[in-house]
Length: 266
Image (tube, rainbow, N blue to C red; front, side):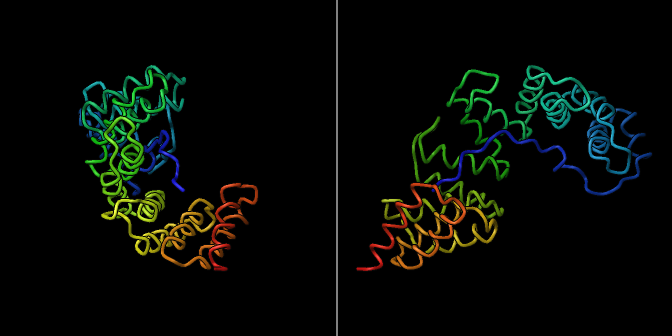
């Protein structure tokens, strides 16, 4: 089973330095107009990295960088508006700064802008606009690479292509993205294209996804399907039982288990 398409994700705290800095030196550079230092100082205040956390102070430093056209500053200010940190929530302002960051090359802004359009959040739904996910994916953002996968698999905003879906899932899988592992395994197991169909590889990749998130019923269901396509209905049934133990009312899991059990008896 496919994992859901990506939702809006906020990254500011994931992109923090992770190291307590020389705040005095950072402040000096920020006050001199260094936009990189201004963004770093903003993140320090937003995350409490080396200073007492202060969202309002973070907003001020992000704004200084954003007003000079710094893409990271624009993204960070947009995130603060959208999440209501340090100021009142303002979706219109948040969207405005997110768009500017995307136009200036920030991959996080590009990804979230694509999700806005794909889901119609604050803007008219437009699948052709959501194809801009590629910009973030080409910059190596795993979430965007995962996002391109279902777009190509279902032909949403781009020409349908399992080959392209597999290519982008592989890129995200190489970065350890478990949802991409799951979807890649599903495609390898279920595709009717002989150039893609590879149940044995599907089993190996699905096992990695399960190991990454052991209690994920969707991943177990995918692994069961991969086992079945690889000619191992017994293992498929055993794995599907594990998925059902986590979601006992899921009708598709019950149907799959019956199918695997019937095959194992013949």
